Amino acid sequence: MTIFPGRRRAALALAVSGVLALTATACGDDGSGAAGGGGTEGSGKGKITFWDNNGGVRTDVWKEIIADFEKANPDIDVEYVGVASKEVQSKYDTAIQGGALPDVGGVGAAMLAGIAAQGALEPLDARIEKSSLFGKLNPGMVESVKAAGGQDKLFTVPTSASNGVLYYRTDLFKAAGLQEPSTWSAFYEAAEKLTAKDKNQFGYTIRGGAGSIAQALDAMYGQSGIQSFWEDDKTTVNDPKNVAALEKYAALFKRTTPAADVN
Image (tube, rainbow, N blue to C red; front, side, top):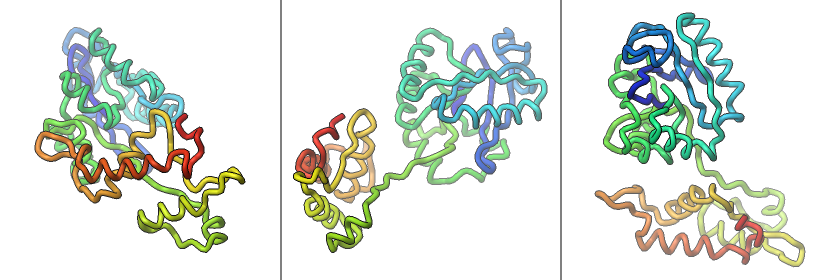
């Protein structure tokens, strides 16, 4: 979760306890009453506008969290706004231009650097050090979001992470006499052997659409063995090893995958 500075000055800290718990370190406004309730920074009173960047999916969870938070903080009102994940970046960009940002909201790692570069986010490092979260956040996740946001600052509190996973049909592997695909060479071998186009059977399926980039990057870096996305001020995406890995991976399309994968 991220705090947005500016005219509306409310501060909110996210804690992970059980599933998720929400606590406020401070809330209020810049003295103009813009954040509601006429509260001031640190007063523990006022209104917080919260944008959920995956509205509809986590709405019930957040509403339960907010209800618990408001019960523990009766002088603070939280306005929940659910935004669909596919729309949230454009909504933030519009809000930045129009000066109508929320007090706090979810900002995924993929869009973090662009929003931070516009000066729209408040660094949370000092707040975390003074909060109950200090020393409790996963160091790897903290380092990851710092790198994603740039400027060596913590612009968001990490609450979840995704791991790239390849699922495989154990029954088909067993029938074909294939071992678990624990190496990339075994993966490519299995994709070829398990393809029987006359039976409408394919050895692999590539994710298409806008969400396909993350999976393609996983496949690239997983094969090339390159450990860092950055080398000085340039990315390693165009490293020859990554290019070769992506070309090999993309070559599976329509050979061992359905043509419909492009969708």
